[in-house]
Image (tube, rainbow, N blue to C red; front, side, top):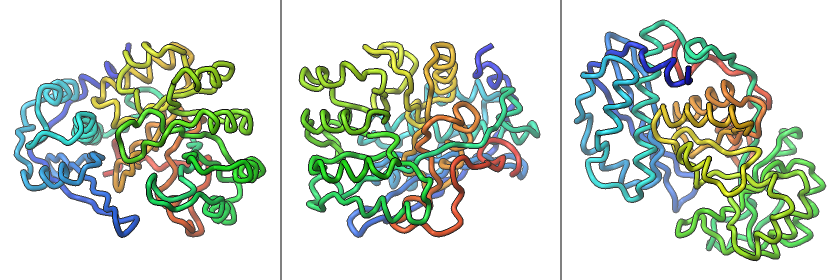
Length: 354
């Protein structure tokens, strides 16, 4: 039985839902907006978080309010079918992938409520153990592309001062010279290099530099190489180390995993990017059957969404290099007392307690 099939017949009752916009301004010129969707019945509530990046999409949803009729479905499977045929955007989204993000928010909220109504949690419902979660912290070492802020190892060292066993997923930049690379190697803390080669036309897109790829491949012989841009020049460099190449941005379904030219050893599965609950769980099943290790990734969640991706990672791939660190690690100087990897998770996000 597939993992989704274990949940599809779970009874579900919804009589209303609410929306809450969350805001966070990490810099004066950028404000992150997400939307918490809470579905309710008889004093129980389940929540999900829409991580759509474009602020105008979040504002349009808030302006529209809870305008959808979610009272019809009587099982989780029926609810997922409804979401698959419903346009959740009162105004067409800025980017099509945002449809996946919003669908995940509604379906994760409904699943959470259904589990509470059944007085159980996701681990029990699918027959898996919730294990301590291994995680890495992701960061860049300079300003955003085009900002003119040069890369420096100092932000990473500041975090290591407080948490010396912390490991990182880093975003290499074009100004990474050999001295910076060698200093990073000395820390022994670099787990994954996110090359951002699959974000063409977005604000995080950087020019593909084969010389940088060559230096990184040589300097970090054990690091995962995420989302490279595959050009004739980079393919020649990456060919001998394709077993270290992994993917994130291009992955939205089992079909896209199966269609990869090179079968990966590990792959980043972001629940919100997969869209529906069935697509996500089928991807977990596929990777397990094919011997591919999944690892989780975040999308600047500001609320319940971060708890949920941590829960899923701890349930399906707890020992992987999960980019699901607690939000406190985003600070330039993380406060004392944050959970360290591997961390025990409370049973929140999917099921009890309320």
